[in-house]
Length: 174
Ligand SMILES: [Zn+2]
Image (tube, rainbow, N blue to C red; front, side, top):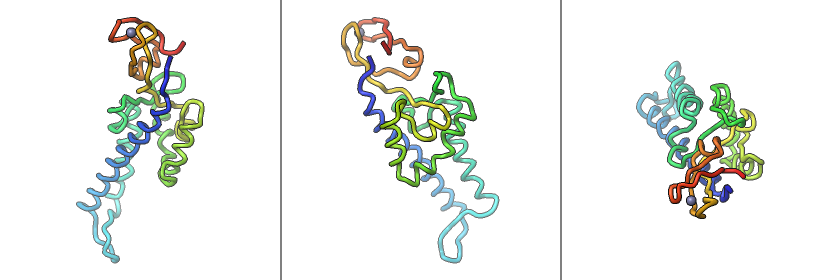
């Protein structure tokens, strides 16, 4: 049996903070390095160079999640994005689950937090839109020896785990 699903919300929140932290840090660096000073004294990137920001976002989020099912923020927590049907996500799904990120960002993650907490499959709005789920990092007790195990996304998808303690091969979901 899977247990302890809820703490995953904190992992996901932290993963998002890491991802957008990296994103904004690099944007800040780029503006500082390549920005031009405006009349009001602030720096900004103008013209064709400004395209670097959406291009960078596009590569960091949709392309990474499509290619690796994960991002730098998710990877340490074993979090992976899958299609609701358990398959790898398509590129369109990767784009769709991220394209409405601004709703989450402008509400300081509150909308995302509530959506993940209360929706049946713990989905953000972007996940609902793209029919994707974030899995991995769930706790499980071995049905044979009762050792607490942390199972990987692929084990959930395959509905099968092998206990490292007693080598019992069991089902993730009853
Ligand atoms: Zn066991």
